[in-house]
Image 1 (cartoon, rainbow, N blue to C red):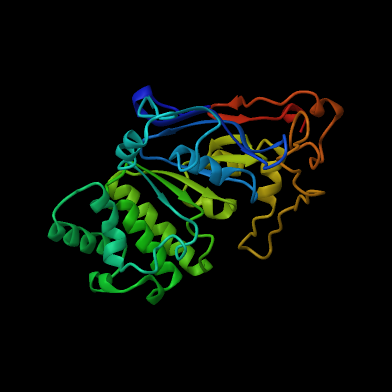
Image 2: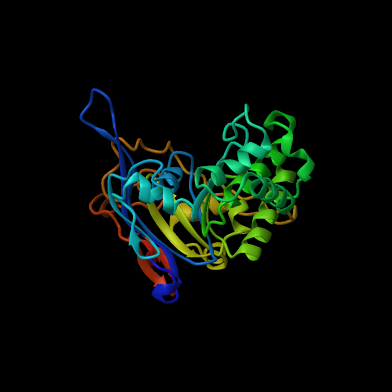
Length: 325
């Protein structure tokens, strides 16, 4: 784990987070998250990246306790929220919100935009009806939508507009932490940039802290201060964004970066093609979970699970062969 700064700077500390899903009728479990640790500073954006199925969305939902962690601790402003009552979590969720991947599925099609955005205010009994309506109008303006659209329904908007509505809903309670669960992956490329820019502007204006979950390093590069790379339920590398892109250490991170297209046609990046499929989280490989696809794996990689070690200031990786690569 690492997050430069004093203890007071740390908004969120996740330590050895585990989430296993039981398989009905079997003794095995799906090891979706298997010992994840990281810290987040106030006002920063931590990108969490990896292939589909690596467990990154499960991490985000576990932090908000939308799903219950199997074990581990999640400290929000120094308070371990694992095991808290529903009533206490409802209080904390005023400060911890989520933007979902699918901007249509996350919006109730039977509710108007006004009702959708005002719903958190009603649940937490904040303001009168008129004050809630004024708040909705302000939030729509903040996310770049006309307040006159408040009485329309989700199906009347484009995908990008619907995601802006989702962002407005997440902002309604003036949170400190927002989990962004692949918020642009379902949008057109041209719209993705607009939504990312909007999130950056809102972060600067309101002092927000983002956990930005994505399967693509190209998108994460433009918004993240630091980046954590996940593979099969574990973090394999974490570093400042500029450091990670300029000097990746883990073979999996190098492979992900090699797949990012370069805008300049005359330049070519040497592509690292990974062999085989991602192993099942029901029965992950022994030792390093990446070893079955790693071009640099040796027999020792199968023996022990590599720990995250600091190889340069605030740059950690989990690989026994980093000194040899």
